[in-house]
Image 1 (cartoon, rainbow, N blue to C red):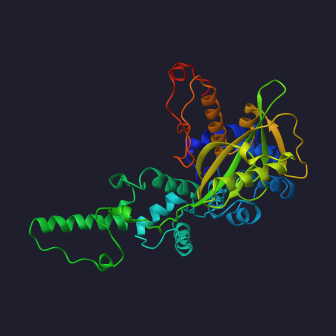
Image 2 (image 1 turned 120 degrees about the vertical axis):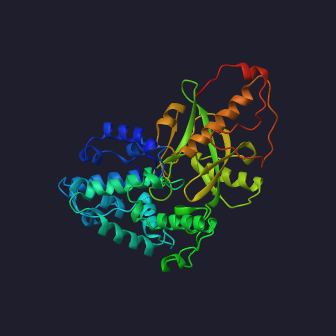
Image 3 (image 1 turned 135 degrees about the horizontal axis):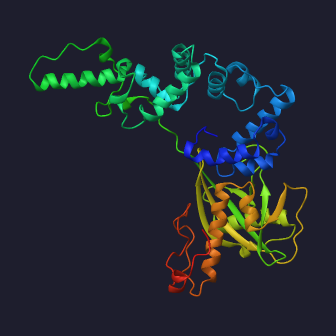
Length: 404
């Protein structure tokens, strides 16, 4: 859970997870649907899937016994990489093996003035070699946790606390900063500066204003690729008059694998709105088994959601269906859900944004004074941003809130 996710975010998820599945055996018996429901909102959903797969393998193939070396953990358990294997083996089983995470990378790169791209495989391998040499053979778990904690609390990305660092005398980046300060002081006093060391004559880039934060160095981050997806909130009246929504299950592999979403269709970039509506209408017809008029799709707005590598724009439409609808069982699993069932299902944060945009539009249309229409192509709305036509009537302003 802590991979690519902060501790503050993980705590509640971890607590709920351990209450529901306190043992490997309990997790192994869970369904992927249950796992996704509990993981919903945490992101990187393949982590939960791999965690359950690993539990099943330990129970069914390894007689319930966890592998106890970094080599076996990485080789035998799906989803366990080099870092996770090293952390488990050293902390839980006392194996003298190092660990390298983002915090450790930062500490080691500053200690040794590593000027190459710290994300390159060759540099990562070198850092692992360093970590394996440095690890305390008698207390590997404590040492690794201390090294990670040093990076998390002292040797931080910005404004590091070098004055409080217990290993600053061994840090080449700190020594270089100290030498620069001494050189500047001697120059200010008009004294002859000391002869620079050979190591200080290196030609790698160095910005004196950055100090130790010159390291680690990373290659320029690639911008996330842009994607557009047409999404339709299909709504009907349930047996008690409350609205119900159609959700469908995504494929079992790929982005957001196994999660539920509103019927959605990837779009080509710069597709005209009319063509966009037609393609979405054809896609919906396959789900509900009857023709859908493109003109009947109501445009709600655009919702932005940024994944780690994708800048996703959801072009949101809605369609109210009258009468019974027979869903095609040959297609992916699908079902009608109430609003409460939707939020307790394994749906992504992005789909929750989509439903929120739809509900805001519905409340706006039911208000006593209609807001102005918003043109297509206006500023897209993201999480927490106001719905199209944010100028409220006095009635809407004074009305008690209807939701969180």
